Image 1 (cartoon, rainbow, N blue to C red):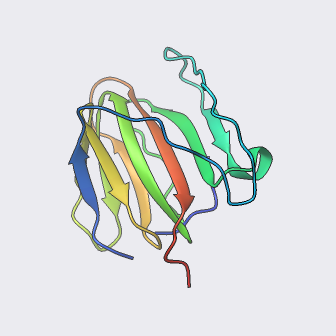
Image 2 (image 1 turned 180 degrees about the vertical axis):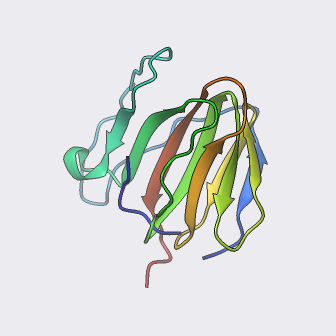
Length: 139
């Protein structure tokens, strides 16, 4: 699944100890806090947040890649993106940058205007959550 995003700064992997709840409303919108469920054992793509439908600036979903498979290369335009691995191992390939290792315990950050894709390099399913949001550095 592609979403409207494009990433222009260094790319980082940030070790994770705790993930906090994020407020997700546009200025002028009144979006209530929400608990969003997903099926952890499903291999199907699962949309979590869709900014156009829900009045948020976030797009999010759960992606599962089987061994030796990869997501489509895409650019996230005016958005920034985080990849949060849940299971398995993989690589984040970003045009013009070194590959980043993906595994549980790391979050990968992709700045705006970067073409990228995720590749499963392991022997089990690579499952991750992506979260994309409009960059405040839009031109």
